[in-house]
Length: 73
Image (cartoon, rainbow, N blue to C red; front, side, top):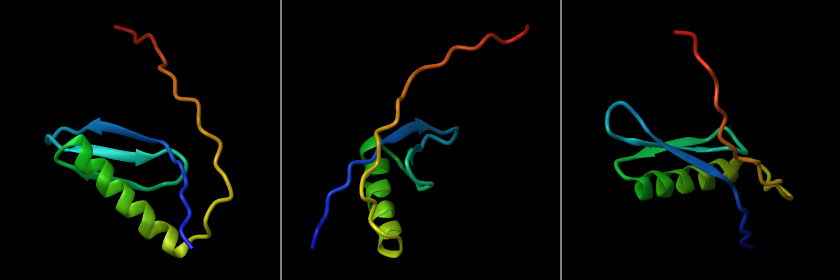
């Protein structure tokens, strides 16, 4: 039986020109040369992760918000 779970990912560029995709609900990360490739690789990594973990009943969607800080000069 197939189940669909909605998770949240962030994608950021790294210093070497790749994109890093991170899942916010579980500690799974992947990368790719494009945003789409990074997300596709993360999707595959998460599917492999859940082969060994029980499927979640539900995840609450995290609140994603920008945070501004002041740095001393």
